[in-house]
Length: 190
Image (cartoon, rainbow, N blue to C red; front, top):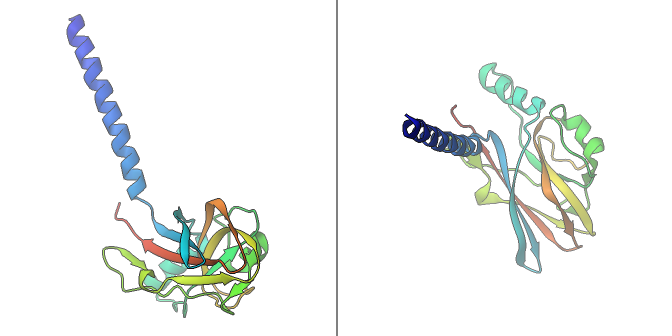
């Protein structure tokens, strides 16, 4: 009897460990929203590359659902912005609050926020891998994160906030550095 109970406890412990590991793996797969791939380019060389996972604020989720299910007009375009405030995006972030709450950085070329030009969706994902957005900084800056909004004008609070991400580590950029951004939006069936 004692040996049987010990065997049953060992099997139960192994199953619990397996279930816990499988649950963790599943949680990683069920990321809805945008995965950012960020590259820092200095003197023509990629000196840092990492991924960051977004917050899709309520405003962006509502816009997506209304366009698809309620036939409201879609936004004309989507654009990347970056922020230099040491702040954390929250679910109530909107296009008209992020500039002041997160501190939009505008000291880069081009003259407008670079476009998020995505390819046709496939396998539940769309991304701008074929047309990565680039910002070349005209002054040294520390960048804490990025957003995707529907207004191209730097400093504008118009439109809709689709995505916001705070990087795990702030990116210290020199004048002349280029920040290259790729966004991959995905939906996973539960």
